[in-house]
Length: 450
Image 1 (spheres, one colour):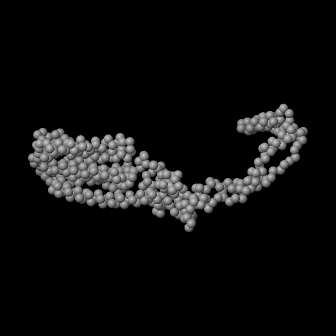
Image 2 (cartoon, rainbow, N blue to C red; image 1 turned 30 degrees about the vertical axis):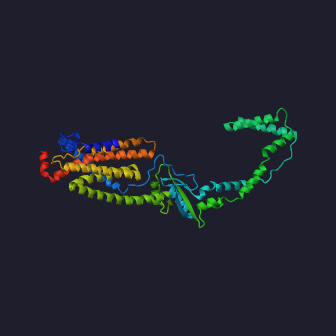
């Protein structure tokens, strides 16, 4: 910055004051020494820019102030006990299901947490199934007397024949055939090389069915239980979500990628009694927005008074203030269309760009006002009005390669703002000078057109 701005300015101030012998080509471009076709094209471009700036005034009320969601910003912490970044809603127990359905339909909502979410899912259906099962479950398993060896041998042979019939039946599925083959192979290994003894059969029955008595008793105990309710929750968890007077807390978390202010605005519009950090940020944003409008209006009025006092010309005032007003409306349109919330750094960058734009516009307005008079030795050339914001844009551009996302975004914003300021100075001020000259000096304009 010192090399690009301070050093050239110091050399210019200490140099010998003399008028330029030959006008620079940039001075000719900004002045009136260009072909009529180029002037017509420049006038059309200026008219288009002014029309776009006037149309962009509709975006001023939609401008948002706050912190933009950067890629490095942490999302809402959904797993924390206090649900940071969530919006809290208090409602009666009978109104909770309706509110949950209404909030679930919002595209900005990512998750909803209530006291019922901590209960086992489908507990009522599971208890009903246990009650139906309890009617068919004995309290104790009946023990039959041990069979003799002849009956045991006949039972094993009969079971193997039935399993063989299952494997050969055409109606059997592949899974059933495979299971029958595995069971048949296990019985063959158990009964070979000689039929099992009575003690082996008794041990096998105890291993396979010995635990069914405990299972049946457990089913009988669970069948008489009532489905768990909110009152069965942990006392600390219950105090968090249900108040002593019966009010329920609903915690709503934003969807990934949704800004804090957009999330708060959507929920406050749906449920006006919503509260939480995002709602506080939204209210703070609204207050800042109101005060920012007053501050911008006051600053513009004060700047206009200073410009009028410095130039002593209404014509120069119009040429200075109009580009600044166009810059404000165009910046509002860009921020709204891109979904950017203006934070403190961006507001400072916009203020700096407006100051540079008005200073450069004043320089051009002063030179155009003295176009018919001899050039004073201390007067700066016309190209200096555009080179200043362009130089500032190149000075801020290296910030875009910063490893910190906030600094990189600030550098990109400053570079873009300075380029827009240079563009408005180069397009609007010379065109407005010609238009105002045509209105105030019709005879001179007529001679120039001839």
